[in-house]
Length: 126
Image (tube, rainbow, N blue to C red; front, side, top):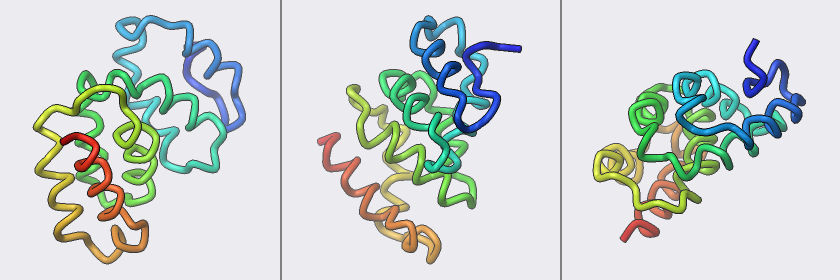
């Protein structure tokens, strides 16, 4: 069992331990950690997002995979917890998918207001 991966949605001990880990030591676990952003009612999501924010470009393949799913709640979690508040300039690879969400959102993406969030993220990156 890896101490930095929550066992359940209230496992704040795992999140606290994650905060002490070097990114390279947990790099292979990013897909599993991102799963905790599928529902922001899960307490562990905020702490995981906070930890991953500075690494938004390092984990862009995993984030882009989420943004290409039909799970708009998960997209929202990743966008609000990582992309909207990352301290780094996002790689250009993000711009086509964010631009598509902003310009041509699906009905479900509109329900989650992802087009507004995508516009905000892109505006912050200028």
